[in-house]
Length: 505
Ligand code: FAD
Image 1 (cartoon, protein in one colour):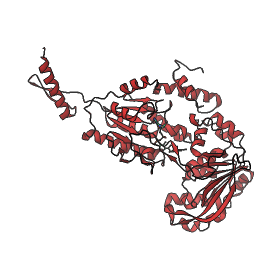
Image 2 (cartoon, protein in one colour):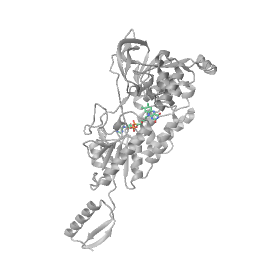
Image 3 (cartoon, helix red, strand yellow):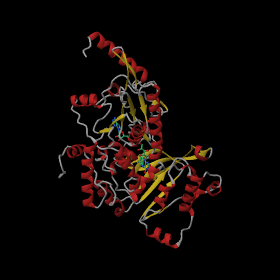
Image 4 (cartoon, rainbow, N blue to C red):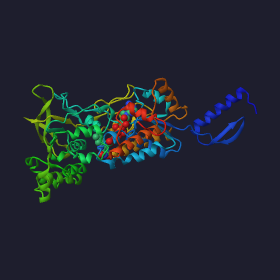
């Protein structure tokens, strides 16, 4: 049957109308005056996710599970996936990294694809992604660092925990950090889990670290380390420490070390214990035990033989990093002595006017990560350092969503990030169902972005390419008796990713 061009146009219009009303579901169409039941395939929603960390993978996982037609593309700046699971989680916590298996299943899903080595905001803009996809989810984490804002902060020997963690975990950007560990005393500012990770890595026996995926470079530096004492400093008191009991227990039991707390810091704590909620009570009991209790004979002997020590110090805020005599590096910290006002978790520190100096050659500030704006087109709240959102919908930006640390700030473990990412996925799905997201405009997704990237000379690393990097790292690790030996150089990662067949670098 041949249709006149007029009839063909009419027919196309009718089909389009049908699509609009039925949102692509099976329906009745009129074709040349004849009513027919037809199933016109719904345009499949194309969603893109920026960031291949836990938030990105959990958002993708929920979307793929909830809708059989959604296509998800993940864009990641580095050639390797998994964000802070690879570059943050401590090397001696391999069990935490098991989430990588779930993320791998998501990445290998037929309707998901991973595009590493693509920096959004630089290689492709968010607006370009919005043109190519029905929805864009920003899950790019917290890449910045909170500064102490005190004189001397930029002296040699002062590092952010973010850089220090990146260094021992093989983050390419921190490869050249070369921390100077030639001093006796290190001060870590902050009392959260990251601070305790750093303290543990500084004090752990090498035999323990050698069996982890810590970098060889970090191992070699730690082997030469002369750090014998680590002070973990907080501006508030023992009832406000921000770590969890697992991390504290690891410190207490760390081979070759002993706790050296100040007894006076725990005056009155035993009485406060009864009124505490259960998790805080258990944490405080352990802290008090480590600080005050006379240990049994075996523990006494263990502590006597320990060559390294650690301690929490409370009610202190940094005022200045004191320079060495030749002004070239850190030699100490000037601290304000605080007292507490209020009580419990909400108590706040007020300076007393008293000042104390502590001699130390290494200062690591662990006072928090911070999200940064990604692209001028995306709203950003500089005071909270997050993307302003309502249940994951970016405010005043239709079609834009966010999940993970960039959505709620840099706190919470992987499980918190998972729940938060599932919430964002649910919000996006609601908008698909309600028609708030326009599905009728055809979107070409990765095809359009691939063309832009090619024009700009950017070559993405796909998940199968990452698998080559993964195999190479595991192969190198096996030779050294560790789970993997991470590649730390982006160029080398790209070289391995593009190698055909088994790698022999
Ligand atoms: P991220 O993990 O940071 O992922 C963001 C991703 O986005 C990264 O891969 C990044 O490269 C990418 N990206 C950034 N900018 C761009 C861009 N412009 N274009 C494309 N991609 C981009 N939780 C636990 O449960 N257990 C632990 O033991 C634990 N240890 C931790 C140790 C440290 C030192 C830290 C900092 C956190 C730890 N956490 C731990 C918390 C956990 O890592 C976070 O909850 C989680 O990683 C946050 O996920 P995210 O996806 O929001 O951010």
